[in-house]
Amino acid sequence: MDAVSIREAKYKTQSILGVINDTIEVGIAKIKGEESAALEVAIIKATRQDEVVPKEKHVATLLEAYHRNAHGVTADIIILGLYKRLEENTKAWLVTLKTLIVFHRLMREAKPSFQVELLRHGDGTGSAPFLSLESFADQTTKDTLDYSLWIRVYSAYLSDRLVTLRVTHFDPVLIKVVEEEEANFKSMTITELLEYVSCLQRLLGRLTDCIPEGAAQSNDITILACSLALQELDPLYSATKAAVQALLGRIFLTDKADADQGAELVQAHQVLLSKLHRLLAIGTIPGLQGIVKLATVEPLSDETVSKVVEYAKNATKDPPKPTANLLGFQSFLVTPESVSAAGACAPASAALAAAAAEPAADAEPFDPFAPPPSPPKPPADPLDKVMHQVFGGALEALELAVKQDVTGEKVIESPGSAAAPPTPTAAAPALPSESPTEGTSPAATA
Image (cartoon, rainbow, N blue to C red; front, side, top):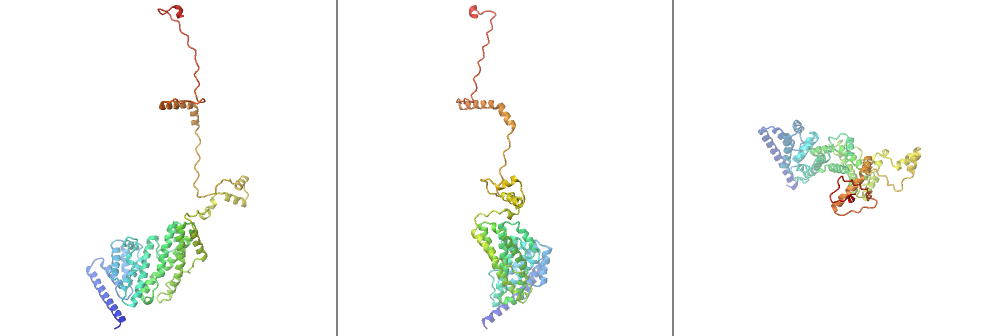
């Protein structure tokens, strides 16, 4: 027996053992008789190790149970039950791929809170690591290697789909009208818009990698998974295209760092479009006809890309100030230029024309973003002037006396401010005494 026959016999044996193990687990779940038994049975039967797509009735059981109780125990049983299937079958491509399909069906058809629950069961980094199987490999046969390659690209898409939802709140199933997303772009900062474009481009890149190759092109299970992913291509591409157009409208008002990142995203958009053309060619694969519904792929012109790259190359650290025309309020501003333009279209008054024709020599250029001038000083109170006239001299004399008392030095007054000497007054005449004093002659008393 050659090596190929040995591998095929080993693969059949593993498949039989897997089916037997799944049957035993179903029996154990039924014996428990708990409320969660029905969910455990549905999970095992939907992902059992046989080459049959997950049956609709088992997936419907999970969807109905989650709709009845979208939070709490039901969500935990479903998510942990599916995660257990991935953990116990790390090299069984059938169980792994069917589990990913069930996850994807729930992400698409269950309430939006199911994806929030998936993120809650993650590792705290904002993603679900159990959906990322980048190192998965089932090396039993040559065909299982092709299936393993498909599992790696498909799981990477599902993982990035959750990350995109967390960062941008974008869901390719929930979005109905792209114009709603375009309205959100106006309220985003340039940093938020750059992150939005980057996330959508990364997710679109993951989706363009979802092309089955080799034996995966003729397997019903991989075709089902591929059709689920391709149904999300049109809304994802439309949203990415609208986001790039919004970025082009604002990139010429960014600083050096944002301009460089924006130029990289614009160039990456062109590369993605070339990969999209390759993805559209898989419509010829049996089972995928009519699945890819995408409008005409319109790449950016070379002139637009060149302008963006040139601006990023010459951009400065500080972003340029937007002009009034870009902000949309040119008609509300009165500038010397607008006054002269109005004079050319309609006759203006002589005073206005003179003011517009002869601007001040030292006038600064008009800046609509300059801070407003400081308010004028309030007029002087007339009462303060009257009080100063009435009590001004007395207040100055009091201040001078206090200064002399504190310093102990005589303050020399200026001639203008020195007080005038007092005018001498005549002494009052002495009154004659009625009885002369003893020892005093009358002559002396007179």
